[in-house]
Length: 236
Image (cartoon, rainbow, N blue to C red; front, side):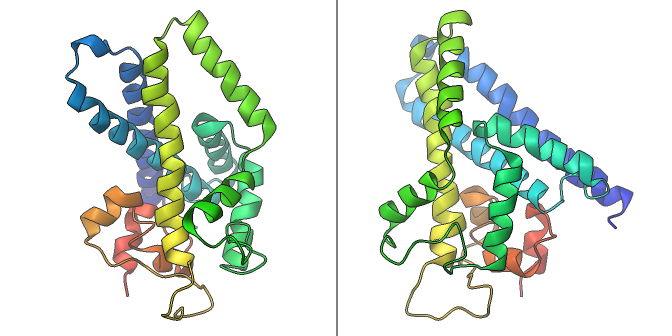
């Protein structure tokens, strides 16, 4: 059982990520693009992408019971809210598939792994996305888009630049650093049955690349009950 202090820290980190993501999105959707230097737009897109990635990583922590570690019901409820905010995902569906990933990493039973034929980055990525995206999400996101555009009167370009593009880019970031690089087959064999490797990079780059799920991916498989911000402490 996690201590009250650990629960407080984990939940506070989760709330901070959610709050920063929400207020950043709210400010960017209302931004007057005409008053902005054009060269700043790519940086704002990357910033919002980073926050979207953090939103999903927080949901991932919830899948491991680490957002509210002292209360599984509240933990899963928080995870459900986060996955809905991210892209209308079902937390239960993601939870089941993610634990299959931990049970059968980089093998035929792993829903995140390629099928042996589509092992290149793009083929594997699109197969990965098809495995998780459902029609109800596409319809739901289309409804939200039209509410933002026609009811809330948010400029179309703002929606595309700061809502659509960052959400899509974050899936690429999560896949590349959290699945493709750690679990792809290379000439160097995996260290153990977890069939995962940690990427060699400084801690600060590990954080900005994917909240430590690239730089410390093997550690995550070894210690799945450790929250993302504590992974560097478990480096072998």
